[in-house]
Image 1 (tube, rainbow, N blue to C red):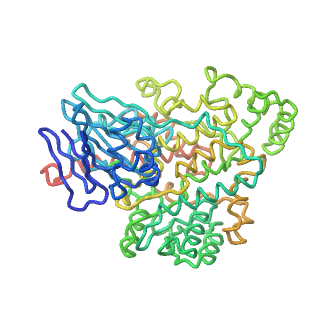
Image 2: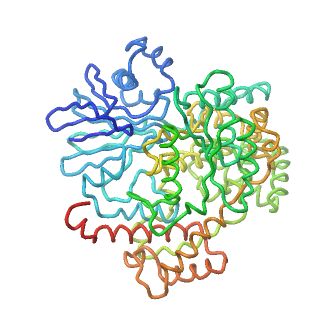
Image 3: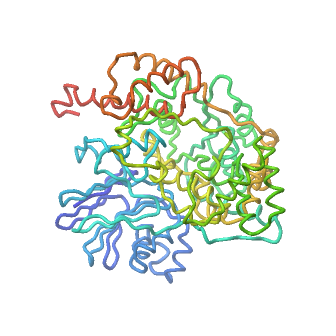
Length: 590
């Protein structure tokens, strides 16, 4: 019926029943269930206490997952904190349960068709096994608009298990059900603001500790920004305290004119870490031959080199600062905070804060207040367009997208935002935007390992669920205020940082790096009159695309972010067609 393979890829343990085969390095049996488990649990002690000590302390993570399922069913998976995915066979119900942790860091792909279900932790071998070839038009639309499409892959009929959900496969088909929900009803208030700082430090220290390997080298991404730098400095502090076996080896990506270089150099010196640098000039953002494998992707040449660095070091773990911007409230425009004040009837405070946001954003105070009024309406009336764009760019975002009208009509989606979960609407008005940003990050699978490094333990301390829940439950003005993004983070972690980082206010942009890769490719691949896959398949309007390519060549506004997606998709489709037509492929050798 199906199989699951571990990212670790040693000779697998196997278990079978008629029509069913499970293969994984981590296989366990319960009273009525058998499961394979890929990943790591961070709350084993708490689980054992909750389960009453059975199974024993020596039980594997797979055995604990089975015990949780047999006690509480699918809903019990909410108790499993860590980065994991699993496949479980319930003998009593003749059902296969596929599940993924709340963040989807350990992906699990599946297909259910013609009485057969197959699932794997890697997309490419599953697609090869299924001989999947037809593209999923909804995925294409999501890719072109958002660079991702929740719970789908480029291939029709091949899906990813949604983060925080389980897929139950029976003779009747597949049913998706959630076991984790946004903590919209949780609210944490401390009498002293210093308590927020202490709790954040404690949670983050634990987040890093449980992701640092117990032996051997490990790599830490170090961009010189606050998130990656905090992960590195905390890991180094754990080593100094004797709570980790080794220091991190930092990996930084450098490019000419980078404003990050002084900061990642300062962090590496401060921590006494070995530092490795890779040049984006030598391993570009996008090249003609490095466009992704099973799915289109940027930075493939660079990630291949990361894998080589890890191999030479003997490192099996790669730690990042994702999704620090979202979790640590790096919001330059969080004016929806005013909505909460209005809802609570604090009109004076609402006017005062509106004035502060108005001055910061250089917009009339009336616009801030009107947006806040709309955002404070009941959940049944809320819509994403009433909420400001989070992040560092407060200017109006470019909207030209070149999607062919017929394709837009074929997809049948009036509001592209509905591709993503709308559960964030149930949160308090001042928190809705934060929850929406988090869910878009998780559902976009931004935390799943890119294909060239999917064999590594790809870990993100800022995605530690207790930490995320805490940050989404505290008062919003503790985390961020007008002109003070990352307010709580700066207070909590300033003592971990070198002086250079404490004083940092800038943020590097990679626009020049992107352009240096895209311009020559656009000139070579998008000549007037040259056939284009994205046009022939009906995805893109040719006239609009030609105009935008011309503006790109002259460094004029062209919604470059989405234009990158079109260029990447075109090159990936061409490479895909080239593979299909190659003699080796035709002969069945590839």
